[in-house]
Image 1 (cartoon, rainbow, N blue to C red):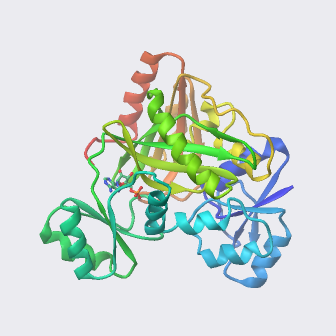
Image 2 (image 1 turned 45 degrees about the horizontal axis):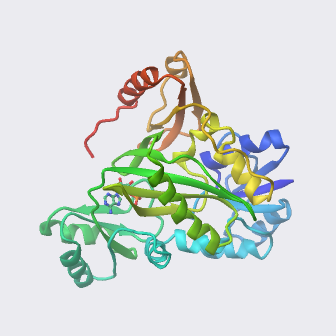
Length: 365
Ligand code: AMP
């Protein structure tokens, strides 16, 4: 069994690592023979923009999945003619466009941020009257890690915001003064659905810095699971689905979804009985799903962004696992992460404080 992965970053890397004990191979596609890729996933050399390469790639694999929603839909559709793709391209079409995504949340009665499509300066001005300030202007497609976004704090910033993003289709969102951000990772095969614990996510400049599993009251977990089920059922979904929410006054407001494994689920590698990566593989192959229970009461994951620390510095901490994505360092690039698992609350809190400082997190957005 060989799974073709569209994309070859750290998510493909972790899918590949999780596939090995099951004796399932993976293959990604890259046009650069020198591509170091992620250091783990084997590469087919070719471009998925080229029909012959794409077909040759598809003949070498049994099934396709993807590690990013930022793949042009026409490429994914073209692959679909050659091989089954999971999760399906129907959900990908929705998830890769913030406007479709928010409309779909509304259709499914999932609360979401107030939003307006923006295609001209006039429309932008009208939308700002409705949202008030601050508001966030975002590109509808191909944004990630806070890229393609502009926070408009006052009317004088309107022209600059529009000028900087006007070459893309846009959406204006009201700014949510949230209490915190959480995400839910759900997994479904053709018959069964399971959920991981909600995690609290701490971002800075739009990039995820760290995640901690929450001991949130059952009502938030239940709300999140109910909303996820609406999506999973509608799309007859197979694979991992991530939904990111704002929490305000104990209510969830959906921000976005990703039809794939997600950074806020990296903790599951060491902090759960079955990782999101293994469960994604099980789900797309329609195998029985594994337990999503956390292995410890306290689990956190910290991202390394822009620079990777000396491994020895952190490995001397007990109960820490280190992942180095084998990437070339670059500003704002996710290069690796560590997972911390603890039974003891005090130990956990102490180490989290140390690790927050260590990754250079400061609490100003
Ligand atoms: P996104 O790419 O939409 O996930 O945005 C990245 C981060 O920016 C989020 O995780 C939030 O911290 C912040 N953000 C995005 N949209 C909003 C919003 N409408 N209100 C407040 N904060 C937001």
